Length: 400
Ligand code: NAP
Ligand code: MG
Image (cartoon, rainbow, N blue to C red; front, side, top):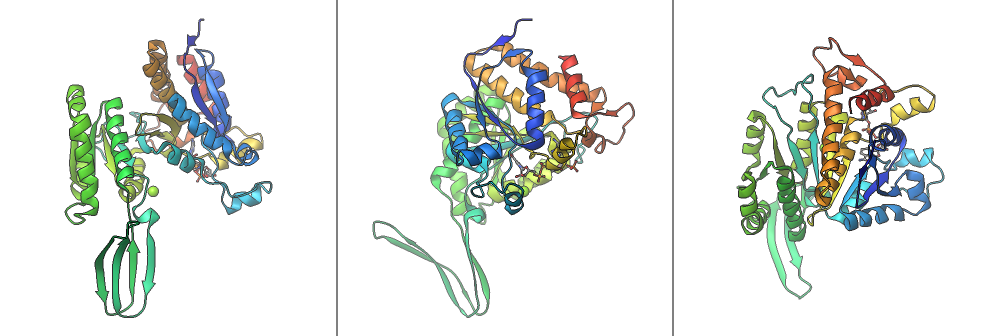
């Protein structure tokens, strides 16, 4: 069989533990037999990040900016426990995802993969809800303090030009807690651009919510920037695609989301996105079925699974046991990247290959061949067989 040719390389970011094992299986069984794969390979496994003083992560992110499309395997973010596990680590390296996100200045979009055998907890949800979380500032970069005595707190801004702006926060008569947070016009703009682009690229409506009735200046600024960019750059494009941009208060959004059929993108401020993405993903099913894509404001894409390296399964794998780790989100990271590459380079066969590989995954699962994590989410397991990872991947290959 002739394999599908590519013109531009995909940026391939390899990773750690069980997902690294699955990465190899997916490539060998599901991609290389069909695609004459061209990638620029970066090994983001923890030991190589350590050997290169994390330069490999920076290089990979820059390659993503150069070529436009990357696919990333899950990676270990070292913590104190990992420092004991890997005594050779020179330091507690930063999260690769955080490094890549800051170089790309991107926004993360998370969407669940739905199959009919697993019913969302919210009965009326028929299509995925994608959450876009603004990942800069607010309480995640806030300064906080506790005070004991009566007094007044003020918010003071000292401009480099000598100007000064002061507002009173509050006068208190006893012990109190305080918090100062900020955001940047530039970051809000990037967030807005990424959201509008991703809505266009996937043909879905975009919702955005804040609490601008209460936070008239701060949240008001988010709303203003979104509306300004939409009017100027995206309104006509949205109309021609038949999609819409919809702004509403966060409380109204929460109520509407629960009553909706799904099938749209919900852009959230940092904290709202943190909380709502956990709620929405749990209500849809499993972390093992959640995809994630980082989209930069200038239109670069990095696809990955939302889950981590599945460490517990990896230790069993090392003991020679067969594990039933779910490769579907990682397969969809590959299909997402291949489809986007195909679209950008005008290679229809690559786009339809991505569609077929996804279809093969769906058909395999719908026919009842699934990994163990999914059986736990099914009300009715008649005709369902839980298989190990390799058997699942082989079953998908048979269907392609
Ligand atoms: P995790 O790897 O997502 O796994 C947590 C648990 O969720 C697993 O033990 C497993 O439950 C279940 N699970 C997750 N993915 C699964 C899959 N594909 N198939 C079947 N079950 C799956 O999260 P973690 O244990 O908190 O983190 C492990 C490592 O991953 C950490 O070093 C962390 O830094 C890293 N991490 C990386 C990323 C990333 O690169 N994007 C994201 C998150 C975490 P059972 O064991 O009960 O079967
Ligand atoms: Mg959270």
